[in-house]
Length: 311
Image 1 (cartoon, helix red, strand yellow):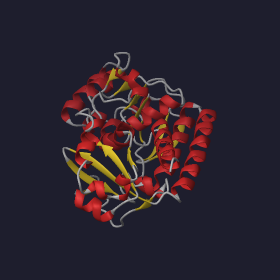
Image 2 (tube, helix red, strand yellow; image 1 turned 135 degrees about the horizontal axis):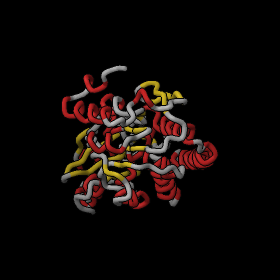
Image 3 (cartoon, helix red, strand yellow; image 1 turned 30 degrees about the horizontal axis):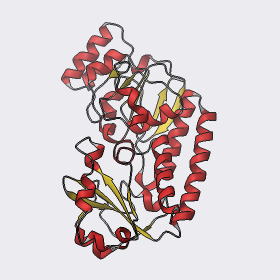
């Protein structure tokens, strides 16, 4: 048998070595009968695994939407509809970025799910138990979300539930694209600490344009993870018909209403979006923290459709 502990960082190696001595299951011991494709390749996983640890909030959202229980979650700021995962009923296995490897081992998981912020820890976690990476592809956002939903439905035998919710999502996106085609041009900005960044097609929030159909008010914005730093002057020059805003400070619990304070100035007030009351404050937790979860994505589509259909 492969010496798993030899492949791990020293603190984790000691944990795994102890687990082996105690007879705790290791990746080669599981009754793996499903091979699934994910962001890091192919992994053999148990069908209907009993003990599931989910580091990725988008995946946790989807599991919850499909009625699939998990045993362990990271310490995180959960949206209201996922608030139950903050309770002691669920084992805490680290943060969104950093697993608590001792807790992961102690949980004896059948399946570990990472994605987004936790994706970088895939290789190490995969040495402990079968691990899949459900990071969403920003270049094919909705397509990758749907593939992730179907993958989880396959593993947990929830195809009927998944098909029903994905059909609703498809219909909702089609309606949004229809409304977006006549809404005018839009710009998405994220505010944090009194500063602003803009995001366009190809960025982490680019689905607003590529998937939802909002015509970009400006082309060529930086597609880095932190977007392109912009000012009130930039917004005035761009003059969007619609301004979509993500308040990062509200998402991370550092205060609410910060975005409004940043935007309430004489320059932004001259834009078409501001004059026509076409500034949409997107749900910050859904957009910034949860992202490609089935419930969060449906809610995002519904919010934008409701906002632009009024006009």
